[in-house]
Amino acid sequence: MSVRINDVAPDFTAESTAGTIHFHDWVGDGYAIIFSHPKDFTPVCTTEFGAVAQLVPEFAKRKTKVIGVSVDKVDEHLKWQRDIAAFAGADADFPIIDDTSLTVAKAYDMLPAEYYLPTEGRAPAHTASVRTVFIVGPDKKVRLTMAYPMSVGRNFAEILRALDAVQATDGVPIATPANWVPGQDVIVALSLNNEQAEAKFGPLDIKLPYLRFAKAPV
Figure 1 (cartoon, rainbow, N blue to C red):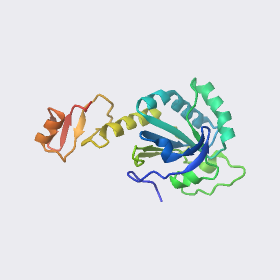
Figure 2 (tube, rainbow, N blue to C red; figure 1 turned 180 degrees about the vertical axis):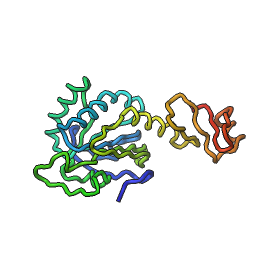
Figure 3 (cartoon, rainbow, N blue to C red; figure 1 turned 60 degrees about the vertical axis):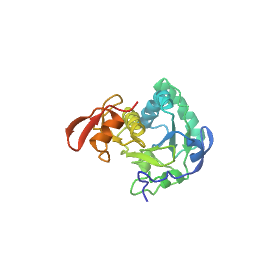
């Protein structure tokens, strides 16, 4: 069964490059991003994990932890981290989970439709489509999901932008328009009438009766 937005993110205990992870405890009172990839020492994944390594300070500013999931073992992850750092010029010092059992991949429905995977001789092709992203809130509920095919590297600048949008709208009666970035106006929820919206957010820019913009709350 797929993990949907507003589901409680499946909890798990797993070994990682940072030791034993109890996921919900590890998330704590901030946000977390969990993302999977097909296999260590593969080209696209190395570029992706390099991008994450470069963005770790930006995630930290947003009180967000990042954690990777792989079907390989911890000792392989530790070796691969050296390649990632050499490529990206930044240490991949976020945890990478050992998911050789596929426990996490199955709990989060990260596998492709035909998910039979041999335990020996596993190749990247066997885990095609295992390239997913989940943003988890402080209440351990899933806020956002993304899934990419094996051939398409993720845009982590977009994932950071999506995190900004999730955090900006979490528990606030606003939404973000297409292509929104921090600092731009937001859309006021229809649950507020004009008077209520102006009292809460200030002057409105009313484009249509159902499309009202306001300055983003600080």
